[in-house]
Every structure is written in structure tokens, then in C-alpha cells.
Length: 337
Image (cartoon, rainbow, N blue to C red; front, top):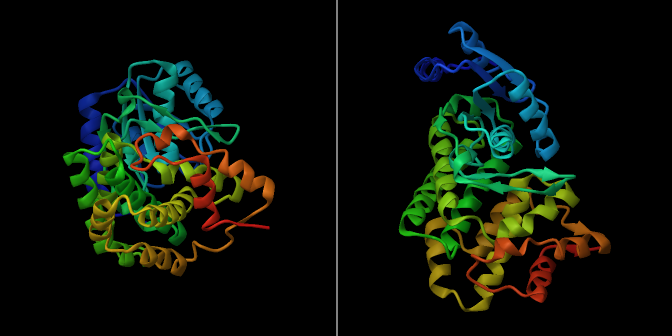
């Protein structure tokens, strides 16, 4: 597939010539040069070595391999081109190495907002082992929206829903500020205006959807994610759901629980206004996208799920959830077989 991204390659070239690193660790998937960024480093005579030995859900052990590659090749700069996995791997390399270097990120999905956040979502033996540090926020970004052209239909859906959930959760968060809520509102406005055409690969939506993702990232960088993300990780691990699907479904039924509580009427009204959905409309929206199928678990899986919620992620949630609440929320959508 051809990418008409010369304007972004030129932006990249100018940035790199100005920064003038000695050697770049280029973090990307094995198809790392399909957008042309690594090739451009060669053209401007900046040395680089590729690192692609990481998983879609990056393991800390893979990050350690990245640190070895960085050190053994005498690198002094990192470029990450890809979705959240590539960018979070780059951020993990900086976090665990304790080295002081800059990161330039080129996001290729409209979803994680990893290019503007202090978080890196990593795993240890498939269990979440995320890190958070302001020093790992990428120093530079290239928003090359042409890369979204090749993103598969299902990936467009689940990554965009991740951005949607980031915005809603940040809006709900007890740590929300006026600034973060403005980021959330703007992000959700862009989502509402563009999502339907975006998943049909309408190129006019690529730039606004990448902005939607970035703004949602800025919102969670201030306010952090809340209960839906905490609820999603075992669905991702045990059911194999894409992260965006797991968190979108979790958000739906946590939202339903919040509505039924009767304690958050003002917040629920604002949520309906900024998302354009009431909770049943949102669940129907997910169902039409085929995301509410196969919501079954064995008893042992369900037990692991209800006991696997990271309670740290619940501290900024506007309701205090008990163990019974957690089980009751999962029971709204998980059928135990």
C-alpha cells in the first residue's frame, strides 16, 4: 500500500536533522519500514538499529531486550513508530534503563494516545505490570494520519473505542480538572463526528480521529483511567479480547451500575450529553459492532476475573465499589457456563 505521507516524512527529517542524534534505536513491528521513517534516517545519514522483538502486549522481558539493544549499539535516541505496543515498549526502555534520552513517537493507530501520556502498559507473564513516570512521555510526536489507511477494520473499531473510554473515564475521575474535562469533551466530539465514516476508511476522518486519540491521552495523563480499565484486563487475558473491546464492554456495564446507583445523577447527565449516548444506547451501539458476543466464562475464569480487579485503579472512581459490587457488575454481562 502506498502512503502519501511526504509532508510528515519531511517534518520527521527536519526534526531529526535539528536534533542530530548519533545513533537511533528504531522501535517498530517487523514491518518497520512500510511508512518510510527508517529509510529516511538512512537518507539523512543518521545511523539506526531496529528493535522489533516485542509482543502486541509488550512483556517486561522484551523491554529488557530493548535496553540491551540500546546499550550494546551505543544508541542515544529512540524513535517509536506504531501503536501503543511500540510506543509503550520505547517508554518502558527509558523507564527501566534509567537512562536519559529523548523519544520521538509516530502513532499509527487512533486509540491509545500513548504518544502523550506518562504511562506504559506492559505485562509480566501476561499479567499487567504498567509503569507511570512523567519522564517517559515522548518528547516529540509526528501525527502522520496517513498511516491509519492500512489499519484493519476491527483494529479501527477497538482502538477508537479505547480513545472513547479514555475520554469518558477521565471525565468520571475524581482527579479530573477543568483542563482534562475540556480534553475529554473535545475528544468525544471528534469521535461522534467521525467514527462512523472512519471505520469505513473515509480518509477525511483520519486526521480528526488521530486528534481524538491524542486529546483522550492528554485527558488520562491528568486524570488517569478508572474502573472500566481495571475491569478490562482479565477479559483481555482470559477471553483474548482486544484491549479496546474489553474496556468498552466493561465501561458499558459499569455505566449501567452508576446509573442505577442514583448517586451520580449530575455526572450521568453530563455523560449522556458529551457522549451522545444513554447507557442502553451505548450497549446497543457495541452490540451492533459485534462486541457483545461470547461473553461467557467458566466458573474458575469468573472467579479469577472478579478477584483480579486492580483496586488501585478504583481509587479515583466516583463510587466506592465493594467486592460484591464488582461481582454484581461482571454478572450483568458475563454468563458463567
